[in-house]
Image 1 (tube, rainbow, N blue to C red):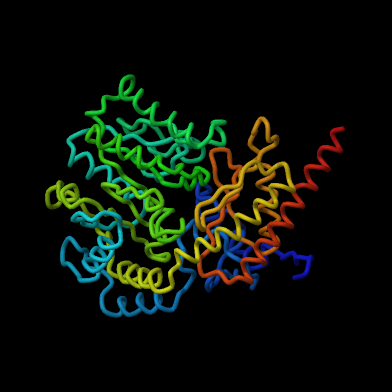
Image 2 (cartoon, rainbow, N blue to C red):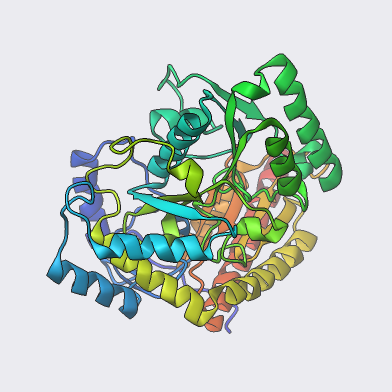
Length: 452
């Protein structure tokens, strides 16, 4: 592969024209990482309206684990749309909803009776998991974690940790949401074991000083925090947290919206810690881009709300259900969990080499195909460096790689590449990141020289 990575002329003429229309008719509150417009996509490649091709390392923020426009999924969507697009399951039911519920009940952790219900978005699924937990337990309080991201609705915005841009001036927030520390060992300056122990002790302290445990309906956790920065729950933490929940009659809810469906190297990330949640929340890569989400859990808990208490007009739309069934076939037939582990290791190794080369890379971390590197101005103080993250993103975009960031401080480069990316595409993308990191290092050096 050539050491010279071609620079794209982006945004092109058609994207610039669309951008002008977007600025006139679409509110600024809806932001975009890149100033180009997609025209078509296939596998791990997206082509914009000007014909520029990009390797996709964002995957629609973790939505395209099976890749773009898979023929099996497209065919399922078309066949279902030709038969039926909508009746509302609450009015007249259809088989694809029941079939999808049956499939998910069988593949999610837990050998007890389970049931599943479907919604449109991840936030909607989280909100309904809270409703189910509160009704089943008769308790009002919910415990979430630092750095968590659960959505943008009133309830899920309250549960989300980051103020800007998600919560600022959107209050007042929903009551009875309490926040516990997540074992973010890198920034806590602790070993993962020490961080886990500290966080569990802090929850016990919360039960004394903030909320009585018999008033807590559920503790909700992302096994790997997504928008928060790809912090991985240390080995054993989820098991210990589940034991703490059982001790106090609290439901354990796993938010697997971003981690689910092979992204972490297993079908669901909780399986790494061999823990069984009472309720499990799914979305994103369940439908390969179709709007569908769900809550799967213990049958006795799921059956607690009375008929009519749950649902929604478009929830579990038949076309989205058909897509999800086709997607599940792909995960199982192609063993994308194994491919996720393979991809993740390749990226982790390359990022680790970059960490050895560039002092602005403070930590590299990942679980399966969910990999990130945290950028800092100083490895000792760990001061976040969002500016260098922006430099790397801009350089990657100019060279044909879609890359996004995350973290409370916007200083974490994260990878959510479709799991059917080819080896050649993967290596080309990593080469672009190499180039972008070198350009960032050059920019830091030039800035330092100008100051001195």
